[in-house]
Image (cartoon, rainbow, N blue to C red; front, top):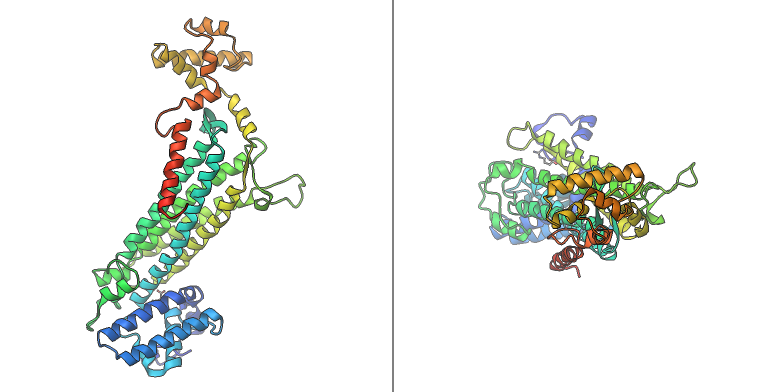
Length: 463
Ligand code: ARG
């Protein structure tokens, strides 16, 4: 295919250089956004008297037919084209003749690509946002089913204090809510600065109407500096940062699911449809999906790092290095979508083994803080109570006892204020139920969290 810019050159581009230069094999996925942007651009040109109404209609019909043909499979995108922008324009000219050559008036590929990527990300992030919301919903529903499941809460992966499984799960729902909001926030900033009309870098001599184009394309404003409009990809970086944090959350959750499904924990059982077997060990049921989500997190971080590094030394304005933005951001988008796509149903179909959770909570002195609090409520300063209980724990370990089985007489040897009611105070149920502080693991707080998330989801149209 002859290059649009061939006029200035005596020789054709070397074949290998041409392949190297071309972005069509990855930017072809933006065909819809490219055509949509061109349709609005042509309308603006016509409104402003830069092209005639008839020329506009010709262009519009041409572009519509290209879109239709691509979608129906009647038109294959030519992988020899330099990029999707060149492909659409040359296909248009093939179809409607000279009027097609008028489309690129008052525009450059530099503002065109900056627009297309934004439009593409807007559409993809809508899907990702919906996926995050449905994961939050699944977590909330799982939490509802598990308000009565008690398990050890951990610090340093050592049993620390008893908590409800609902409370543990809900922690992730709040993280994901912030992930949702971070993406939304990045999109709002991205959509406030429509770059089209910045042209190559300096703006244009035509009397264009950038606001009209921006509004038609769903933006809330235009970029106010044409060099900025074509030079920055910070919106990609912001989204990839948000994706990286989201993946980090999914990865931690995955790690816990992997631990919980091991024989050492056996707190949960993943459904057969989200686990795999081993080619040699007949007993195995492996949490591959969770492991892959954990593994693919590194990939999304890598995408962010790649683009940060690409941009860091670039002088203003456009440089061809920036073509690299797309492979990073597309990979990040694809990976996040794929991970959420399997993570959510994997979680939804996971069953909880409440008895095993409870058994794990019965060992390891996770009610020791509550025993100290028992003494504090009888008037002892916390530090003194803490020391006493430490000694009692050490004694129990030596005697192979736990706090629940240490006889009251022994307790009284440590401190006379211990009475029979201590056993009730250190039961796992009491430990959880009495955690009445806001945001704590007590049932009132857990129910409040569920109600809060339900309201958040309702506001987003999920009932
Ligand atoms: N394929 C190019 C990209 O993705 C489009 C912009 C090309 N602009 C240019 N001045 N060569 O960045």
